[in-house]
Length: 432
Image (cartoon, rainbow, N blue to C red; front, side, top):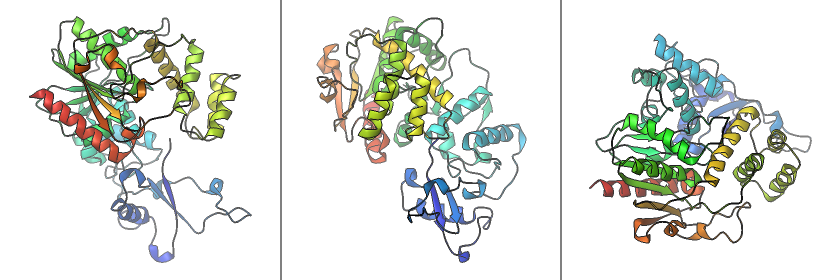
Protein backbone atom coordinates (compact mmCIF):
# COMPACT_ATOMS: atom_id res chain seq x y z
CA UNK A 1 0.00 0.00 0.00
CA UNK A 2 1.44 3.42 -0.98
CA UNK A 3 2.07 5.93 1.81
CA UNK A 4 3.66 9.35 1.86
CA UNK A 5 6.78 9.36 4.07
CA UNK A 6 8.86 12.42 4.99
CA UNK A 7 12.59 12.11 5.71
CA UNK A 8 13.90 14.85 8.00
CA UNK A 9 17.43 15.99 8.83
CA UNK A 10 17.50 18.31 11.83
CA UNK A 11 19.72 19.42 14.66
CA UNK A 12 19.70 18.07 18.25
CA UNK A 13 17.68 21.06 19.45
CA UNK A 14 14.63 19.58 17.65
CA UNK A 15 14.26 17.02 20.41
CA UNK A 16 13.66 13.29 20.19
CA UNK A 17 10.79 11.32 18.71
CA UNK A 18 9.62 10.26 22.15
CA UNK A 19 9.17 13.64 23.80
CA UNK A 20 5.95 15.56 24.36
CA UNK A 21 3.80 12.71 25.59
CA UNK A 22 4.92 10.28 22.90
CA UNK A 23 4.16 12.44 19.85
CA UNK A 24 7.59 14.10 19.72
CA UNK A 25 9.08 15.28 16.44
CA UNK A 26 6.62 13.36 14.25
CA UNK A 27 3.65 14.85 16.06
CA UNK A 28 5.05 18.38 15.93
CA UNK A 29 5.86 18.17 12.22
CA UNK A 30 2.50 16.64 11.37
CA UNK A 31 0.68 19.41 13.27
CA UNK A 32 2.78 22.03 11.48
CA UNK A 33 2.20 20.78 7.91
CA UNK A 34 -1.46 19.87 8.55
CA UNK A 35 -2.24 23.56 8.92
CA UNK A 36 -0.64 24.34 5.57
CA UNK A 37 -1.34 21.38 3.28
CA UNK A 38 -4.47 19.43 2.26
CA UNK A 39 -4.93 16.08 4.03
CA UNK A 40 -3.78 13.97 1.07
CA UNK A 41 -0.39 15.80 1.01
CA UNK A 42 0.36 15.34 4.72
CA UNK A 43 2.93 12.54 5.25
CA UNK A 44 1.79 9.63 7.38
CA UNK A 45 5.30 9.14 8.82
CA UNK A 46 8.31 11.37 9.56
CA UNK A 47 11.65 9.55 9.64
CA UNK A 48 14.51 11.39 11.33
CA UNK A 49 17.94 10.94 9.72
CA UNK A 50 21.40 12.15 10.63
CA UNK A 51 21.96 12.79 6.91
CA UNK A 52 20.29 11.91 3.64
CA UNK A 53 21.90 8.86 1.95
CA UNK A 54 23.62 9.72 -1.32
CA UNK A 55 24.85 7.74 -4.32
CA UNK A 56 28.50 8.01 -5.46
CA UNK A 57 27.25 10.65 -7.92
CA UNK A 58 25.90 12.78 -5.07
CA UNK A 59 22.23 12.11 -5.79
CA UNK A 60 19.66 10.95 -3.28
CA UNK A 61 19.86 7.18 -2.83
CA UNK A 62 16.17 6.33 -2.51
CA UNK A 63 16.85 2.61 -2.03
CA UNK A 64 18.89 3.40 1.10
CA UNK A 65 16.06 5.33 2.78
CA UNK A 66 14.85 3.26 5.77
CA UNK A 67 11.26 2.12 6.20
CA UNK A 68 9.37 4.00 8.94
CA UNK A 69 9.45 2.48 12.42
CA UNK A 70 6.76 2.96 15.06
CA UNK A 71 8.27 6.20 16.40
CA UNK A 72 8.05 7.80 12.93
CA UNK A 73 4.30 8.16 13.35
CA UNK A 74 2.47 10.80 15.36
CA UNK A 75 1.94 8.70 18.46
CA UNK A 76 0.13 9.63 21.64
CA UNK A 77 1.22 8.59 25.13
CA UNK A 78 0.71 4.84 25.19
CA UNK A 79 -2.16 3.38 27.15
CA UNK A 80 -3.12 -0.23 26.56
CA UNK A 81 -6.54 -0.96 24.99
CA UNK A 82 -9.28 -1.71 27.51
CA UNK A 83 -12.01 -4.27 27.05
CA UNK A 84 -12.84 -6.68 24.23
CA UNK A 85 -13.92 -4.06 21.69
CA UNK A 86 -10.82 -1.85 22.05
CA UNK A 87 -8.56 -4.91 21.99
CA UNK A 88 -10.18 -6.34 18.84
CA UNK A 89 -10.07 -2.92 17.17
CA UNK A 90 -6.39 -2.41 18.09
CA UNK A 91 -5.45 -5.79 16.58
CA UNK A 92 -7.16 -4.91 13.28
CA UNK A 93 -5.53 -1.45 13.21
CA UNK A 94 -2.10 -2.99 13.82
CA UNK A 95 -2.55 -5.42 10.93
CA UNK A 96 -3.89 -2.82 8.49
CA UNK A 97 -1.44 -0.04 9.40
CA UNK A 98 1.61 -2.27 9.81
CA UNK A 99 2.32 -0.93 13.30
CA UNK A 100 3.18 -3.35 16.07
CA UNK A 101 1.64 -1.63 19.09
CA UNK A 102 -1.61 0.35 19.03
CA UNK A 103 -2.79 2.25 22.10
CA UNK A 104 -6.23 3.53 23.03
CA UNK A 105 -5.02 7.15 22.56
CA UNK A 106 -3.85 6.61 18.96
CA UNK A 107 -5.51 8.29 15.95
CA UNK A 108 -6.25 6.12 12.88
CA UNK A 109 -5.44 8.83 10.34
CA UNK A 110 -2.35 10.17 12.14
CA UNK A 111 -0.94 6.63 11.96
CA UNK A 112 -1.29 6.57 8.17
CA UNK A 113 -4.94 5.60 7.68
CA UNK A 114 -6.80 6.78 4.58
CA UNK A 115 -10.08 6.08 2.76
CA UNK A 116 -9.00 2.78 1.17
CA UNK A 117 -7.77 1.46 4.52
CA UNK A 118 -10.96 2.76 6.14
CA UNK A 119 -13.03 0.56 3.80
CA UNK A 120 -10.87 -2.44 4.74
CA UNK A 121 -11.27 -1.55 8.41
CA UNK A 122 -15.07 -1.44 8.09
CA UNK A 123 -15.08 -4.81 6.31
CA UNK A 124 -12.74 -6.46 8.84
CA UNK A 125 -14.71 -5.22 11.84
CA UNK A 126 -18.04 -6.29 10.32
CA UNK A 127 -16.58 -9.77 9.83
CA UNK A 128 -16.04 -10.11 13.61
CA UNK A 129 -19.44 -8.64 14.47
CA UNK A 130 -18.42 -5.03 15.23
CA UNK A 131 -20.51 -2.34 13.55
CA UNK A 132 -19.83 1.37 13.05
CA UNK A 133 -20.05 3.80 10.14
CA UNK A 134 -17.40 5.64 8.14
CA UNK A 135 -18.82 8.86 9.59
CA UNK A 136 -18.12 7.48 13.10
CA UNK A 137 -14.50 6.88 12.10
CA UNK A 138 -14.02 10.39 10.66
CA UNK A 139 -15.70 12.00 13.69
CA UNK A 140 -13.95 9.82 16.30
CA UNK A 141 -10.60 8.66 14.86
CA UNK A 142 -9.06 7.91 18.29
CA UNK A 143 -9.31 4.24 19.19
CA UNK A 144 -10.93 4.80 22.58
CA UNK A 145 -13.55 7.17 21.12
CA UNK A 146 -14.34 4.94 18.15
CA UNK A 147 -14.71 1.92 20.41
CA UNK A 148 -17.38 3.74 22.42
CA UNK A 149 -19.49 4.05 19.25
CA UNK A 150 -19.23 0.36 18.32
CA UNK A 151 -21.79 -2.29 19.10
CA UNK A 152 -22.04 -5.98 18.29
CA UNK A 153 -24.43 -7.15 15.59
CA UNK A 154 -25.67 -10.51 14.36
CA UNK A 155 -24.07 -12.02 11.28
CA UNK A 156 -26.21 -11.08 8.26
CA UNK A 157 -27.70 -13.62 5.85
CA UNK A 158 -26.94 -11.43 2.80
CA UNK A 159 -23.78 -9.71 1.49
CA UNK A 160 -22.26 -7.19 3.87
CA UNK A 161 -23.16 -3.52 3.50
CA UNK A 162 -20.76 -0.76 4.58
CA UNK A 163 -22.40 2.01 6.62
CA UNK A 164 -20.85 5.30 5.48
CA UNK A 165 -23.30 7.65 7.25
CA UNK A 166 -25.57 6.00 9.79
CA UNK A 167 -28.31 8.57 10.44
CA UNK A 168 -30.72 10.90 8.64
CA UNK A 169 -34.43 11.60 8.27
CA UNK A 170 -34.65 10.88 4.52
CA UNK A 171 -34.55 7.44 2.78
CA UNK A 172 -31.05 5.94 2.42
CA UNK A 173 -28.70 6.50 -0.50
CA UNK A 174 -26.98 3.32 -1.77
CA UNK A 175 -23.66 3.46 -3.65
CA UNK A 176 -22.24 0.59 -5.73
CA UNK A 177 -18.49 -0.09 -6.23
CA UNK A 178 -16.41 1.18 -9.12
CA UNK A 179 -15.53 -1.14 -11.99
CA UNK A 180 -12.59 -2.45 -9.93
CA UNK A 181 -14.85 -3.29 -6.99
CA UNK A 182 -13.55 -0.32 -4.99
CA UNK A 183 -15.86 1.41 -2.48
CA UNK A 184 -13.26 3.81 -1.06
CA UNK A 185 -14.36 6.64 -3.37
CA UNK A 186 -17.69 6.66 -1.52
CA UNK A 187 -16.10 7.53 1.84
CA UNK A 188 -14.18 10.53 0.50
CA UNK A 189 -17.18 11.78 -1.46
CA UNK A 190 -19.81 11.43 1.28
CA UNK A 191 -17.52 13.22 3.72
CA UNK A 192 -18.00 16.33 1.52
CA UNK A 193 -21.75 15.87 0.96
CA UNK A 194 -24.49 17.68 2.89
CA UNK A 195 -27.39 15.21 2.98
CA UNK A 196 -29.92 14.28 5.66
CA UNK A 197 -29.99 10.54 5.03
CA UNK A 198 -28.12 7.34 5.84
CA UNK A 199 -25.56 6.39 3.18
CA UNK A 200 -24.38 2.85 2.43
CA UNK A 201 -21.80 1.27 0.12
CA UNK A 202 -22.76 -2.07 -1.41
CA UNK A 203 -19.77 -4.37 -2.07
CA UNK A 204 -20.11 -7.03 -4.72
CA UNK A 205 -21.41 -10.37 -3.43
CA UNK A 206 -19.11 -13.40 -3.74
CA UNK A 207 -19.00 -14.65 -7.33
CA UNK A 208 -19.52 -18.40 -7.62
CA UNK A 209 -16.72 -20.18 -9.45
CA UNK A 210 -18.90 -22.87 -11.05
CA UNK A 211 -20.72 -20.51 -13.42
CA UNK A 212 -20.07 -16.99 -14.72
CA UNK A 213 -22.09 -14.29 -12.91
CA UNK A 214 -24.66 -12.20 -14.75
CA UNK A 215 -25.33 -8.58 -13.94
CA UNK A 216 -28.97 -9.47 -13.33
CA UNK A 217 -27.89 -12.15 -10.85
CA UNK A 218 -25.51 -9.80 -9.03
CA UNK A 219 -28.26 -7.18 -8.85
CA UNK A 220 -30.72 -9.69 -7.40
CA UNK A 221 -28.30 -10.58 -4.58
CA UNK A 222 -27.54 -6.94 -3.81
CA UNK A 223 -31.27 -6.11 -3.72
CA UNK A 224 -31.62 -8.64 -0.87
CA UNK A 225 -29.05 -6.63 1.12
CA UNK A 226 -30.76 -3.34 0.26
CA UNK A 227 -34.19 -4.58 1.37
CA UNK A 228 -32.86 -5.77 4.73
CA UNK A 229 -32.01 -2.11 5.39
CA UNK A 230 -34.95 -0.53 3.54
CA UNK A 231 -37.81 -3.02 3.01
CA UNK A 232 -39.86 -0.74 0.74
CA UNK A 233 -39.16 2.03 -1.76
CA UNK A 234 -38.75 4.55 -3.11
CA UNK A 235 -35.06 3.72 -3.49
CA UNK A 236 -32.09 6.01 -4.20
CA UNK A 237 -28.97 4.69 -5.96
CA UNK A 238 -25.60 6.05 -7.08
CA UNK A 239 -22.41 4.82 -8.73
CA UNK A 240 -19.19 5.78 -10.49
CA UNK A 241 -17.77 4.75 -13.86
CA UNK A 242 -18.54 1.32 -15.32
CA UNK A 243 -19.37 -0.03 -11.87
CA UNK A 244 -22.50 2.14 -11.86
CA UNK A 245 -24.13 -0.03 -14.54
CA UNK A 246 -24.85 -2.35 -11.62
CA UNK A 247 -26.95 0.44 -10.06
CA UNK A 248 -29.01 0.52 -13.27
CA UNK A 249 -29.46 -3.28 -13.11
CA UNK A 250 -30.51 -2.94 -9.44
CA UNK A 251 -33.10 -0.34 -10.48
CA UNK A 252 -34.35 -2.75 -13.15
CA UNK A 253 -34.69 -5.49 -10.53
CA UNK A 254 -36.51 -3.22 -8.06
CA UNK A 255 -38.94 -2.04 -10.74
CA UNK A 256 -39.70 -5.67 -11.59
CA UNK A 257 -40.68 -6.12 -7.92
CA UNK A 258 -43.11 -3.18 -8.26
CA UNK A 259 -40.88 -0.90 -6.22
CA UNK A 260 -40.15 2.76 -7.06
CA UNK A 261 -36.71 4.24 -7.78
CA UNK A 262 -36.77 7.98 -7.08
CA UNK A 263 -33.10 8.91 -7.59
CA UNK A 264 -30.23 7.65 -9.74
CA UNK A 265 -26.84 9.40 -9.67
CA UNK A 266 -24.36 8.45 -12.41
CA UNK A 267 -20.83 9.78 -11.90
CA UNK A 268 -19.44 9.95 -15.45
CA UNK A 269 -21.09 6.71 -16.57
CA UNK A 270 -21.00 5.83 -20.26
CA UNK A 271 -23.61 3.56 -21.85
CA UNK A 272 -21.81 0.22 -22.35
CA UNK A 273 -20.86 -0.26 -26.01
CA UNK A 274 -21.51 -3.51 -27.87
CA UNK A 275 -18.22 -5.21 -27.15
CA UNK A 276 -16.76 -8.20 -28.92
CA UNK A 277 -16.69 -11.16 -26.58
CA UNK A 278 -13.42 -11.63 -24.71
CA UNK A 279 -12.24 -14.80 -23.03
CA UNK A 280 -11.84 -14.72 -19.22
CA UNK A 281 -8.03 -14.50 -19.48
CA UNK A 282 -8.24 -11.73 -22.10
CA UNK A 283 -10.66 -9.81 -19.90
CA UNK A 284 -8.29 -9.99 -16.90
CA UNK A 285 -5.46 -8.62 -19.08
CA UNK A 286 -7.70 -5.80 -20.31
CA UNK A 287 -8.73 -4.87 -16.75
CA UNK A 288 -5.09 -4.89 -15.56
CA UNK A 289 -3.85 -2.73 -18.44
CA UNK A 290 -6.75 -0.29 -18.18
CA UNK A 291 -6.09 0.22 -14.45
CA UNK A 292 -2.41 1.00 -15.22
CA UNK A 293 -3.19 3.58 -17.91
CA UNK A 294 -1.63 6.26 -15.67
CA UNK A 295 1.89 5.00 -16.49
CA UNK A 296 4.23 6.90 -18.80
CA UNK A 297 4.25 5.78 -22.44
CA UNK A 298 7.50 3.80 -22.20
CA UNK A 299 6.47 1.81 -19.11
CA UNK A 300 2.99 1.14 -20.47
CA UNK A 301 4.35 -0.09 -23.82
CA UNK A 302 6.67 -2.49 -21.96
CA UNK A 303 3.71 -3.95 -20.06
CA UNK A 304 1.48 -4.06 -23.14
CA UNK A 305 4.07 -6.03 -25.12
CA UNK A 306 4.75 -8.30 -22.15
CA UNK A 307 1.01 -8.96 -21.60
CA UNK A 308 0.65 -10.69 -24.96
CA UNK A 309 3.10 -13.46 -24.08
CA UNK A 310 2.77 -13.88 -20.33
CA UNK A 311 0.42 -15.26 -17.69
CA UNK A 312 -1.53 -12.91 -15.43
CA UNK A 313 0.82 -13.73 -12.55
CA UNK A 314 3.86 -12.87 -14.68
CA UNK A 315 2.19 -9.64 -15.86
CA UNK A 316 1.57 -8.51 -12.27
CA UNK A 317 5.15 -9.40 -11.28
CA UNK A 318 6.44 -7.34 -14.21
CA UNK A 319 4.17 -4.43 -13.21
CA UNK A 320 5.57 -4.57 -9.69
CA UNK A 321 9.15 -4.65 -10.99
CA UNK A 322 8.69 -1.41 -12.94
CA UNK A 323 6.98 0.32 -9.99
CA UNK A 324 3.37 0.22 -11.23
CA UNK A 325 2.34 -1.86 -8.21
CA UNK A 326 3.91 -1.02 -4.80
CA UNK A 327 6.48 -3.55 -3.58
CA UNK A 328 4.62 -4.13 -0.30
CA UNK A 329 1.39 -5.19 -2.05
CA UNK A 330 0.60 -8.91 -1.93
CA UNK A 331 0.42 -9.93 -5.59
CA UNK A 332 -1.84 -12.87 -4.76
CA UNK A 333 -4.46 -10.48 -3.34
CA UNK A 334 -3.95 -8.07 -6.25
CA UNK A 335 -4.50 -10.95 -8.67
CA UNK A 336 -7.71 -12.00 -6.92
CA UNK A 337 -8.96 -8.41 -7.11
CA UNK A 338 -8.32 -8.25 -10.85
CA UNK A 339 -9.92 -11.66 -11.42
CA UNK A 340 -13.07 -10.59 -9.58
CA UNK A 341 -13.16 -7.32 -11.51
CA UNK A 342 -12.80 -9.26 -14.77
CA UNK A 343 -15.72 -11.49 -13.82
CA UNK A 344 -17.80 -8.38 -13.20
CA UNK A 345 -16.82 -6.98 -16.60
CA UNK A 346 -17.69 -10.31 -18.26
CA UNK A 347 -21.16 -9.92 -16.74
CA UNK A 348 -21.25 -6.31 -17.93
CA UNK A 349 -20.25 -7.43 -21.42
CA UNK A 350 -23.32 -9.65 -21.77
CA UNK A 351 -25.81 -7.25 -20.11
CA UNK A 352 -28.57 -5.93 -22.36
CA UNK A 353 -29.40 -2.37 -21.25
CA UNK A 354 -33.17 -1.96 -21.19
CA UNK A 355 -35.14 1.28 -21.34
CA UNK A 356 -36.49 1.98 -17.84
CA UNK A 357 -39.12 4.50 -16.64
CA UNK A 358 -36.64 6.39 -14.44
CA UNK A 359 -34.71 9.66 -14.46
CA UNK A 360 -30.94 9.80 -14.06
CA UNK A 361 -28.60 12.58 -12.95
CA UNK A 362 -25.43 12.33 -15.05
CA UNK A 363 -22.53 14.13 -13.36
CA UNK A 364 -20.10 14.26 -16.28
CA UNK A 365 -16.43 15.23 -16.36
CA UNK A 366 -15.78 18.49 -18.22
CA UNK A 367 -12.30 17.45 -19.40
CA UNK A 368 -11.68 14.54 -21.81
CA UNK A 369 -9.99 11.45 -20.45
CA UNK A 370 -7.79 9.88 -23.14
CA UNK A 371 -7.21 6.19 -22.55
CA UNK A 372 -4.77 4.08 -24.54
CA UNK A 373 -7.31 1.23 -24.38
CA UNK A 374 -10.14 3.35 -25.86
CA UNK A 375 -10.96 2.93 -29.52
CA UNK A 376 -10.47 6.19 -31.48
CA UNK A 377 -14.04 6.12 -32.82
CA UNK A 378 -15.62 5.82 -29.36
CA UNK A 379 -17.31 9.22 -29.08
CA UNK A 380 -19.95 8.59 -26.37
CA UNK A 381 -17.57 9.60 -23.59
CA UNK A 382 -17.43 13.14 -24.95
CA UNK A 383 -21.20 13.71 -24.92
CA UNK A 384 -22.78 15.20 -21.81
CA UNK A 385 -25.41 12.43 -21.67
CA UNK A 386 -22.73 9.78 -22.25
CA UNK A 387 -24.94 7.90 -24.71
CA UNK A 388 -27.83 7.21 -22.33
CA UNK A 389 -30.24 9.11 -24.58
CA UNK A 390 -30.07 6.04 -26.83
CA UNK A 391 -32.11 4.06 -24.28
CA UNK A 392 -33.81 6.79 -22.19
CA UNK A 393 -35.84 9.83 -23.11
CA UNK A 394 -33.47 12.80 -23.31
CA UNK A 395 -35.71 14.75 -20.90
CA UNK A 396 -35.14 12.02 -18.29
CA UNK A 397 -31.38 12.71 -18.24
CA UNK A 398 -30.20 15.64 -16.11
CA UNK A 399 -26.60 16.37 -17.14
CA UNK A 400 -24.47 18.27 -14.63
CA UNK A 401 -20.86 19.33 -15.44
CA UNK A 402 -18.08 18.67 -12.92
CA UNK A 403 -14.50 20.00 -13.29
CA UNK A 404 -11.74 17.49 -14.02
CA UNK A 405 -11.52 14.39 -16.17
CA UNK A 406 -12.98 10.94 -15.47
CA UNK A 407 -10.34 10.26 -12.79
CA UNK A 408 -9.62 13.69 -11.30
CA UNK A 409 -13.29 14.64 -10.85
CA UNK A 410 -13.23 12.16 -7.94
CA UNK A 411 -9.56 12.03 -6.91
CA UNK A 412 -8.85 15.79 -6.83
CA UNK A 413 -10.18 17.24 -3.53
CA UNK A 414 -11.33 20.52 -5.10
CA UNK A 415 -13.21 18.78 -7.91
CA UNK A 416 -14.62 16.22 -5.48
CA UNK A 417 -16.13 18.99 -3.36
CA UNK A 418 -17.90 20.38 -6.44
CA UNK A 419 -19.18 16.88 -7.26
CA UNK A 420 -20.35 16.33 -3.68
CA UNK A 421 -22.26 19.61 -3.64
CA UNK A 422 -23.86 18.82 -7.02
CA UNK A 423 -25.05 15.39 -5.88
CA UNK A 424 -26.34 16.86 -2.60
CA UNK A 425 -28.29 19.53 -4.48
CA UNK A 426 -29.82 16.98 -6.86
CA UNK A 427 -30.71 14.65 -3.99
CA UNK A 428 -32.38 17.43 -2.00
CA UNK A 429 -34.29 18.50 -5.11
CA UNK A 430 -35.82 15.04 -5.56
CA UNK A 431 -36.80 14.88 -1.87
CA UNK A 432 -39.17 17.87 -2.12
